[in-house]
Length: 326
Image 1: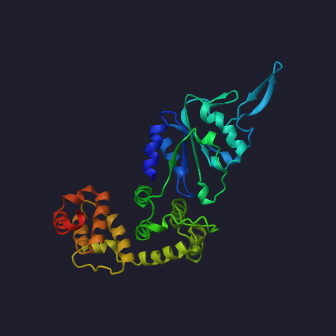
Image 2: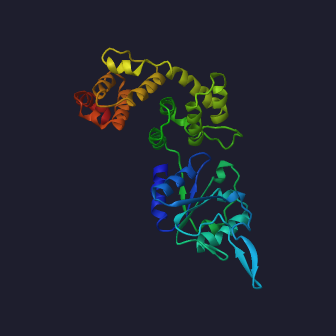
Image 3: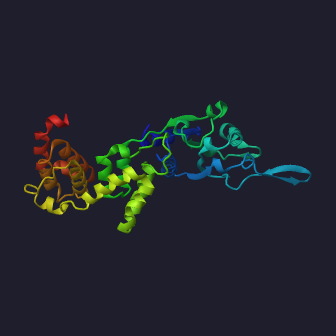
């Protein structure tokens, strides 16, 4: 399931108060999806890192009142309202901690504590095949969840990244090298590797305009040396592109790059400039590109400005590319 499907699933399960467990490789965005769903449903989010708990932490500390022992519930557990109790990295927690979650997940209580009626338990963790720190989840606990497998989908990530203000050069690079969005090999002991999370870190680094002397080192420390070298080379090319505004002003005569990487980058820059005054010229230029890049440019331009489909150039372009669009 991609991120969009995971979100739709959680929006079904959370109102039903049905516990769910999200499985996925490191860095795919499991925690972020849960946070987004809670916000969109207008619910609070309590994020508990299960791996940091001791077995007694969920039950709290004992106190004595009138010769009767009571348990003082921990302050991090909710007491009112509606929300999502997120047990992140649950299967990385020791078996005794997982056992302490049995009653909370199934019976919505631990000892004297009762989970408020408007709250739902959601958990997440890495797969055992990822060779991350995990403990096998007991079947008794696993059977209490609906299990959702999170897979990385390039188109879904690009859609999120476009709305999230990720830089044009990073978007163009992922379109050019989609396999590098998530390139995690559990057999290798890599400190840094490409993932949706680490590329988001790269976007933040680029936005801070780092000193050129350390930029490549920062990229290597974020996505690993291989992906960093490829992205650095792509960025140098991207930053030397023809002026997109000049291309838009002269769509019939502006030069058409031959290198695929350059075309990916230029299409990304042009699509971002789609608007009422530029739509006609952008489609005119797209008609001069190789068909696959023309489709890429027009599709992304339409995403940014629906008026593109109403231009005369768009009608001519669709007629000329009918065989590609079918």
